[in-house]
Length: 158
Image (cartoon, rainbow, N blue to C red; front, side, top):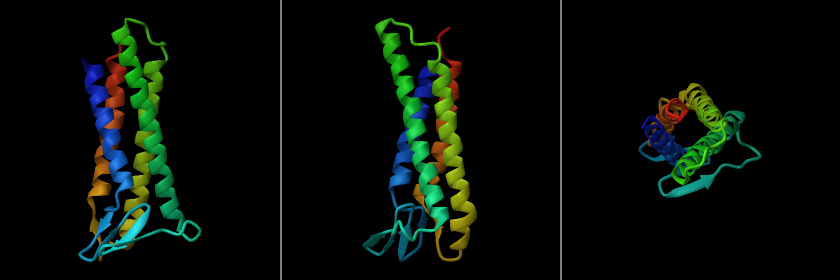
């Protein structure tokens, strides 16, 4: 039962993190918003020029994507464990450890992204922009994914 709860938590965290990473509401104001990939003023949005983007944005982008990939791997390994259990076959004994490692890696990467954004970018614009829902979704995902990985590891069949 712990395994299923962990799988649901990690899956929900992955979905929230994908939405948070892809959407543009990391910082919002009355006139616009910006996120990891573009800035919007009203209905007009412009992607960042990758040749001129500051390093702190690149760091956030990189760690957010590492978080998506690692969380996706953790959820995929959990799904494989469920499929093996349904088929009555034994999954490799390293699956639970790899699953937990992937979810923990995702949690660390997302945490780094959140801290870099909060300590540098959000701090630079705090007088004009408020924290947006995309940033909050990634914070929630950062709690759900490692917790789900831990529960999947703790709930594995011996």
